[in-house]
Image 1: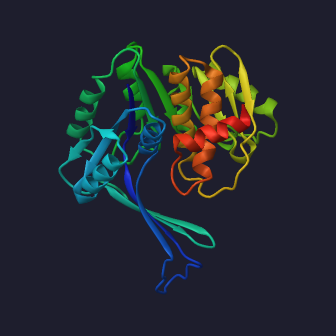
Image 2: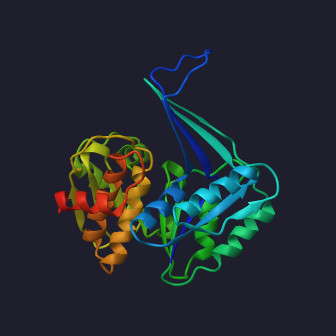
Length: 302
């Protein structure tokens, strides 16, 4: 079974308008409401690809109820910790001449709620996969990922971490199964600009030396690179298409990789290409990728 964790999920209110004028009433010409959060995106795409998962994290208030209902319409199973106070955040994403986001703060996550999450994590068993994705809200300890990975160490659980900079670097000692920085984030970790594939592979190997098992580097329109635990690397150009919405593309790549890994009994090459195709399918669509969209793009890169 696959489990995803989203500490601070949101309801995303997405609007489009020709131009945003500050201080004036602005009329939108398009609006959409979706559940948001990196782990939640992974769960939705996994379901679209035909794989079940359980979404974990924290929900609060009427917005938490609404988010849960939306997840159920996508067919996603959840086991969130319910908070007594506050409400799950609403993020406003304004797509105009320039994109603007206004993100809510989210509820306070108590010590009791944190213990409840760990009790749910204790149900994971050998062979399960756990996806830790996104930032850590300021109401949680900043080493929360490390605490979770240390707590689950030695149980044979594959842990995927999709985070940035120091948050990612600090968990490498726990040997995550997969990490997914993009090429810019990888460069920032080492304080340099990565200009070639050789540069990227060299620094991905450094992350393996620090503990990462497999390193998947997304490069937007330039495709992706996978460096496996066996020392093999795969390189794929990006499928051809028109960028519509980059939100969730990286999460979709993670979901596609896991789906491909499971469907091929652990073939890294198949997992990699399925990840690239699924990430691109989401980028080329208003919504997150479907299996049909991902498989259509897969045929163009394999």
